[in-house]
Image 1 (tube, rainbow, N blue to C red):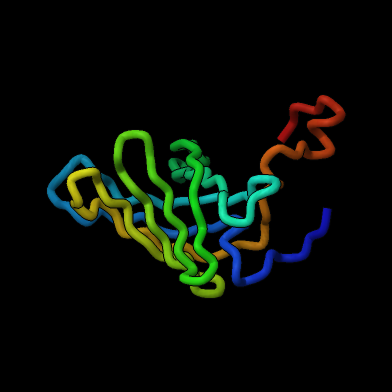
Image 2 (image 1 turned 90 degrees about the vertical axis):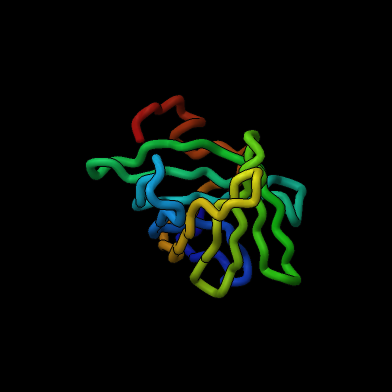
Length: 136
């Protein structure tokens, strides 16, 4: 596996930044976030997004969604099962967007920067997984 960073014209990679609440007062809380975006084999426009929040220095999974990426507009759109949508615009090493509720309310503003660590392609196992190694 290459340690080379992914091209800047793709959202594939690991992103870290802030997810800020836009509706206050509410149950929403600002979060430090890590998003991993991986290519789905045999697709040029379908990706998976795994969203984690940082709590007490540890990543806590918030879920994984299938997303569509439109290379011409640099837009990544991730519909969630509850009708909420996350939409990002890619600009080089920045991924900026919003989480919008099903009623159209903009719930979060998400501002992310690309990190050096890249996720594996979905459907491919890491070398440690092939060996049955469960350490991470």
